[in-house]
Image (cartoon, rainbow over all chains, first blue to last red; front, side, top):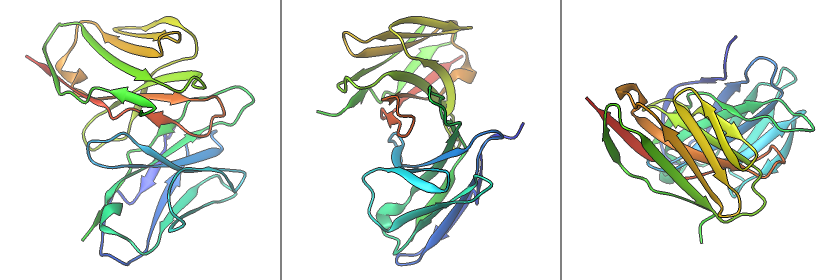
Length: 114
Length: 111
């Protein structure tokens, strides 16, 4: 049973460029959340997708956008990259239910901005 | 005041010791309480998950929640070098949309 998979594992970009990160959720999961984790910090919520729509968004600028596909996989896009965007980007998946299910994380994409 | 406070450590203990990791929180809307373990260059791995006050045990790990004091703890018994990692507390209001994390405590278990 494959867990959450993310690609690429590591990416180097320069300021002003654009980047796309990809995530495949755990089998059976339909909800994908994205987090940014700066060095020495806990993950910060960016946004969550369910049924191909953004359901909730954290305190991140519009340069951060996303998409969810019919097979539940997701992309995170960041435009006009800044040095401060250097971080580990984590994808988490869960199964939406009227109850509650914990989120499971992938190993992330480490983004370095030069 | 930050929503979640967690001592970043590092915390260094000898093998076999009992480890206590703690977080305090201020948001009364938090209903679900989680501990994740994160090894270097890896993603967070769910260790413990609970939604009620009291203790929950899983092997060498015990999660404790005190909602009245807004305080959660993770205890690790008989600690092993393989337990060396960063431990993140995480909270959810129940809408299953956004997790709020502590900064993480770095734990080193020495031989």
